[in-house]
Image 1 (cartoon, rainbow, N blue to C red):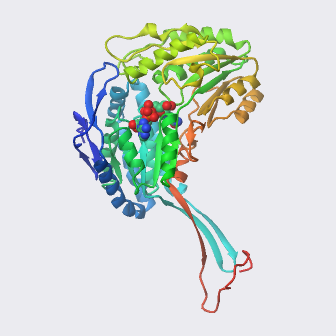
Image 2 (cartoon, rainbow, N blue to C red; image 1 turned 135 degrees about the vertical axis):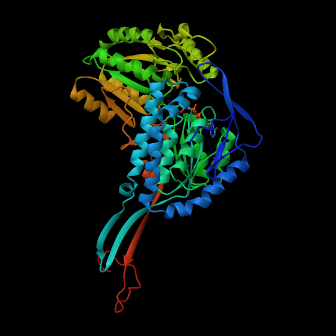
Image 3 (cartoon, rainbow, N blue to C red; image 1 turned 90 degrees about the vertical axis):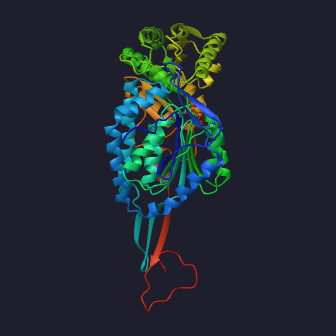
Length: 501
Ligand code: NAD
C-alpha cells in the first residue's frame, strides 16, 4: 500500500475509497516549520456530508450484526498496520502539525493503546443477568450500538484523538463519519485507507474534510445518532448545545488550564523537569499541558530559578530534525495569540523571567521559544484564558489548602498534578481537587487507555469520556425481562411486585 492519499488536494474518504472533493472553499495546509503550503483541502459540502452519512447508514446494520470478535479482528489487523507504518504516520503528523518526530511516534503509540482497548470489545460489551427475579422470570441487560456516530477532532492530535473515537465506536458496532481538523487533514484519510486494508466493510468509516460549516452539516443531520467532539471550550459548549437540541448523544471535550502544585517538601529538580516537559513539550499545544505552576511556600524561589534554567536550555526547531525539544506552533495566528498573552501578562503585573519572543527560529516557520512568567495573578488574562502555546505562569500559595482553592476556582478541570513527598498531602490533593485526571509526581497525568479520559468543569460537556469510557458512550443499554411460559401457566393481569409474580 502506498501513501497515494497525500495528493495536492486532500480527498474525502467515502464508501471505502478516496473521493476527490467538488468545488468549494479551500484551506491551505502549511508545514508549520517552514510556512510552506504542502497541499490544500476543500470544505465538504452539504451533499458530501449527505453522501458520507448515507453510506454510513447503509453499512451500519450489517456491521452491527457482525459478530463482536469478527469486528475486533479487523481492528487487530488495523493495529498491525499502524505499528508497521509508525514512521510514515509520525512523519505525516510532524509535517502538518509540527511536533517533534519522537513526540509524533509517541502519539502513534498512544493510538495503538487505544486500539488495544477496542480489541477487548467482547469483554466490554458484556451485560448483566439476574436469574429468577420472579417465578420463572429472568432479567438481563446488554448493550447495542447507536448507528451512525460522528467525530469532530482538533489539530493537536491528528491521529490519537480520531483513533480513540473511531476504534471504540466501530468495535461497538457503529458506523463512523470523521471530520478531522482542516489544519491537519491528511492523517485521517491514511487511517481510513488502513482500516479498509484491514478488512473494514465499505461505508463503516468515512472521512469528510472541512471546517465549521461541514461540522454543522454533520451535527444537524437527522441520521446521525451521536457526536464526539474534542477541541476548544467555546466550540465544545456550542457542539453540546446544538447536538442535544436535535436529540443526539453527545460528548464534547474542551480546553484546559492544568495546574502543577509544588509543595516545599518536593524534589524541586524533578518538579522543574516535569514543568518544562509538561509546559513546553509539543510547544504547549496539548490539552493536558501544564500552564500554571502553583508554588507553595518556600518552594517558589528555587523552583522558578530551576525551571527558568531548563526553559532557556530547551531546543526549539523543526520537529523533523534530531535533538529538538520543541517544534513550531500550528500557525502565525497562534504565534500572535502567544505574543499578545505575554504582553498582557506583564501589563497585569506578571514578571517575565524567560521571554520566548527572543527565541524566534530561522526562516518563515511559526516558532516562538518557551516563556516563564512569575507572580501571575489569578485575575489576569494569562491565568484565566487558555493560551495553547509554550507559556508557563507561576502562581504562589502559602499552603496546600490555598493551592487547592486556586486550582478549584479555575473554571477548567482537565488535569491537575501535585509534586510532594508527603503521602497525606498527596491524598488530600487527590481527594479534594476538581479535575478529571490527577497526577502525583508525574508531569502529565494522562491515564493509560484502560481508564476513561475526560475533564471536569468547562473541560467537558456530557457524561462519558474517551478510551475505556467510550464503550458506554457508543452503545445503549437494553434490559430484557423474560419468562418462557409453560403451557399450563397463565399471566396475572395486574402489576405485581417482583418476587410475587
Ligand atoms: P477548535 O475548537 O478550534 O477545533 C476543533 C474542531 O472543531 C475542528 O475540527 C474544527 O474544524 C471544528 N470547529 C471549529 N469551530 C467550529 C464550530 N463553530 N462548529 C463546529 N465545529 C467547529 O480546536 P483546535 O484549535 O483544533 O484544537 C485545540 C483545542 O482543543 C484546545 O483548546 C485544546 O485544549 C483542545 N483539546 C482538548 C482535548 C481534551 O481531551 N479535552 C484534547 C485535545 C485538544
